[in-house]
Structures are given as structure tokens and as C-alpha cells.
Image 1 (cartoon, rainbow, N blue to C red):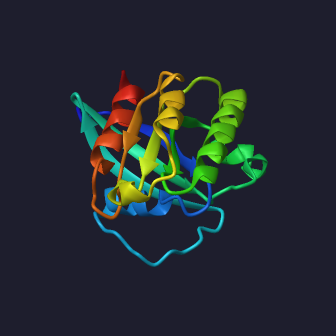
Image 2 (cartoon, rainbow, N blue to C red; image 1 turned 120 degrees about the horizontal axis):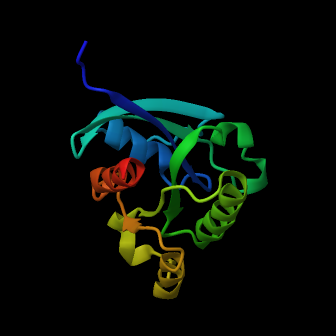
Length: 169
């Protein structure tokens, strides 16, 4: 028939342990926030359908377990990925260093793809250990750097929409 073509895109959320990847996805996909922290075993996959400038887009969102040892991210998880979000916990500087390593590794494996750096937990910004020079450094990669809070539902829709817009442009 003359149905709308749905473009399917796989995206991955990457980053250190407990930076808030699962919470951001839950907030976006189910509009909920769960304070109970459950360590994601391997991968959890969610789906969200949205419209980006008349394109019907189906996001297949892979929630990949936190890797403080980024070398253990299985490259098979990244296969077929159209874009990704690297989540940083503003309160944990280690998660920033993990983010840089993850970004380097993903670019080596998958080349230049649409991506976003998400600075999560901005509801606790007064407790951040991330300094302005760290944030400046992220900007030099030329990708959006966005502040989010899964808890307050701040910047979450905008972040996924920003990536989705990169995916269809």
C-alpha cells in the first residue's frame, strides 16, 4: 500500500557504570524514572517511534552495560549502529575519562557516526566535578554536548531528538 516508510535506526547508549543510561532510556521510552539502580546485564533493547521532519523513525535503543573497562565493550554490540550517545555523570570525573576512551574506541571500530555527549544528572549540578575546561574539551570534537537529568526529565527528549535529526539529515 501507500503506507509511510518507517526508517529503522539502531542507536547505542554507552558510558561508565551507573552514569544513568538506563534511566535516560526509561524516561524517554516509558516516560518514567526509577530510582532503583539495576545493573544492566549485557544489553537491554527498547524501541521508540518518532517523527523527524516528516520522516517516521523507529529508534532501536541499545542500552549497553556500563564499562569502566571500555575495551570489554563487545564490538558485536555496535554492529549496525547508526549513531550513539555517550553518557557522562557530571559528579564522577572517572566517567568523563571513560567517555573519552569509549568515543575513541567506537570511532576506531565504526568510523564517524552521529553522536552526542550527554552530561547527565544536571539536577545535582552543584555537586559536579566536571569543570568548564572538561566541557570545552568535549566541544572540540564537533558533536552536540547536552545536559540532561533523567530524574527531572530535563533535556531527555531534546537529546534523543537531536540525535534523531542527525540520523535523518
